[in-house]
Length: 102
Image 1 (cartoon, rainbow, N blue to C red):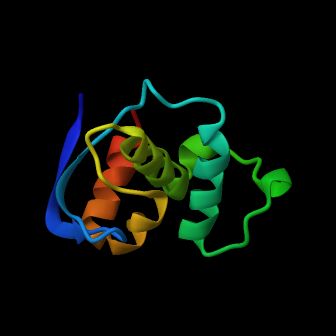
Image 2: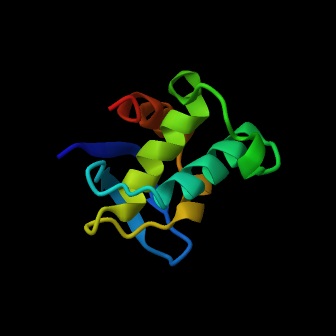
């Protein structure tokens, strides 16, 4: 199991302080793809359009970040939600990109 020790603690929307997050890539399911693509669009600053979402995903930094984040959200030990990504530090966001290469 992979864990990321955050360089700066994350304050979640529920008020929790998170210092590390774990990832459950094996637990990702096809239904998670929609959330990954939605989060990828959010990171790119564009409107979400599932029909226009077809591209080479492995070359998309935002897709790798989003995949790692959804894998973290799905991990039972983490107390984070999808929208908590807005509170992550930039350096930790870049670490998510590396982790998302799984």
